[in-house]
Length: 240
Image 1 (cartoon, one colour):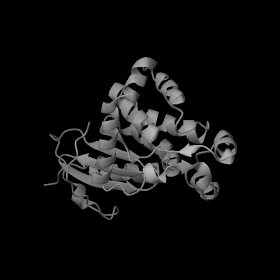
Image 2 (image 1 turned 135 degrees about the vertical axis):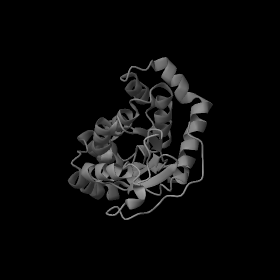
Image 3 (image 1 turned 60 degrees about the vertical axis):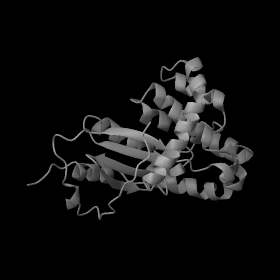
């Protein structure tokens, strides 16, 4: 688990990122922190982008999925409370990103209105998954969101979450034990704190660690082309 730390994010104009030319060939492999929430509709729309980034950049950077905890405690409630907003907002996400929200979500889960919107179980699911498999964490994050926003899985349906993890080759019993453990719950809360340390005030937020420095790549949805260009500039070698 990544420990909490103090950091400074450089809020740069991405059209002129000369300050990013600080990487030497001896530095460790850069890490792109993808701060998301499984119930964030824009993160669902961003899933194809981060998946493509992972596929095309995996030889140059590692990607760590960090759960942000968007809907917790006082924000938890039936989907009917936010249904009027979602019924308009999901169309904007579809138009901007190209993803599709499934009828099982729109007609059943959203339409019925009683399903509780709670990020906790899905965030714990992500932490538990990473305790078994770090290689496929981007894919699992996307799978969790598809399960909710396309297949209509209730966010608190732990049996379906365990079943989903098993499709990645993880033993159901072992995963369920991890999912219910105090260690995984604690680690999930630490991820929420880490997201705050990364100044993730919204989702998705992407921050890259290059050497010992941290650079903001995006706050909110960006296209693959834009994000890829920013990563390319962040990884430019030191110019003497």
